[in-house]
Amino acid sequence: PAPETISALNPQSVDFDLSGDGQWLVVVGETASASMLVHVFEFDEEINQFIQYGQDILFGTNEVGKTSFYDVDIEETGRYLIVAQVGQAEFLGLIRVYQRGINQWVQVGDSLTSQIQGDGFGQDVEIVVAAPQGVMVGFSAPYQNSVYVYTLGPFNNWVLYGSPIEAAAILTNGNDSEFGFDIAFSSSGTRLVIGAPSYQNGSGAVQALSFV
Image (tube, rainbow, N blue to C red; front, side, top):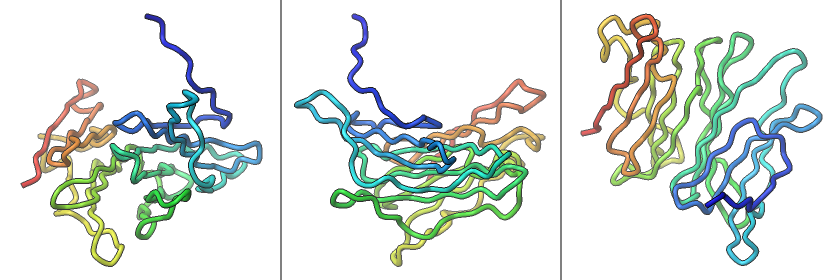
């Protein structure tokens, strides 16, 4: 059967993601003044529409003449979302995580930022709630061939889980492979899959890792 249009959303979409249960939709949109806003919508079964939940989240503003790229992911049941402004040559990458409150979204932990420009920090971001780790986030810096996993600590702080995952430790001659250009967690958070599209002159590679 043909798909049915259930919602038409107003903001210009830069990136979006749908929760695993299909109830929550997050959209990063750009306004006419180049402000970057994050909008979250909850699906209302009675009217068959997505309705905005909570406030617009002002994430940043694009500078004139500079292009920003964003990535977003929402947790399986819509409790948490992660948003990244991808690090480019002109500026550092920036990542923030938000938790759903009563008709509002509240930032969790400090913002995470890259250390050098042009590393692609935040190119792909993922968030999952796992046992026993709790909230886990994964993100990449593919032009440094690195992937990072953090957990939320007891003081509302982000704690590096293990060591950074480096291409050199995973792939033979893995430098310049854009390791981490795409990543994905399993729903349990026990596995992480990492893509390296430029490995071996563009042949590409996908590596699955298990957390023990």
